Image (cartoon, rainbow, N blue to C red; front, side, top):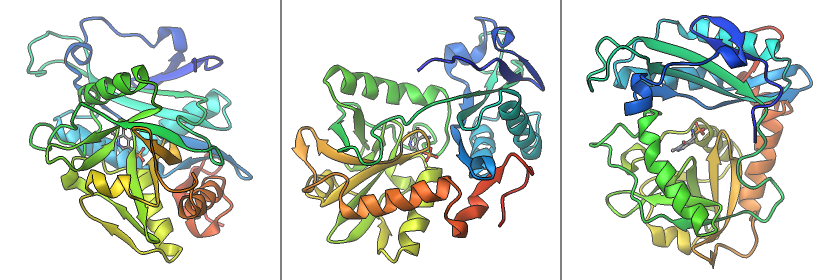
Length: 313
Ligand code: PMP
């Protein structure tokens, strides 16, 4: 991946050329990770580019900022508008969207007191992060690194510094030849992937874990929960032991970058007979229809760039 063919970046209220979207090496966030961010996707549909669950992502951004006392000097509506303008300006029909709000340069005391809050938005074309639908699924490992406990850092916040935990786990997985890492929590139960939530399927029933299990409450997770229930599946949210994954019929990851990716193996052990299994495949198919605007029931989840309003048909 590279950032080719993206001439414009939104930074502190205006759209600037990519090369000018810079900051000083003394920025507080660079040293201490004092920022919050989002990962959002914009998809190509028959109605032009549509952003998936934009409002929910921005609400999570504002909630993450509140945890860290980062006062974002823009309203949700202003950020919404900035994102739409930036995608149009870069003439992208589909892309990944990365808003980030962080402490800039003033001094390097740990307390970020007088460091200004800076806001930037990047957009760029980004293909699927892990396996594509129809591929045999991803091979993951159980990370030696544990997911931090909610009493250490707010796991439901998407904050820059918190990701160093995922970076360690991801590096270890890659070094050992796996596609992605799965982190257990401090209780020894399943937490989540380095950048994904996890679902397991057992005897036709679907399970995923909850905020108290040290996870980010994914927007894709929420979408898949709604889709699965609407399809008539029984879906329960509760803590999950590693054994339940190892003996599952199917398992899959969800995330904005990853979308819905079947898990084929955990530490070399096969999960189920085929990947994607039938339940995963059904959810993948509906999700693909939802994001391409072909599933009218969920059209409220798509924010059209053409009319600037949540799309309704
Ligand atoms: N957990 C972590 C640690 C993540 O980084 C992500 C990606 N944002 C997710 C879960 C999935 O969240 P979402 O579906 O909102 O992208």
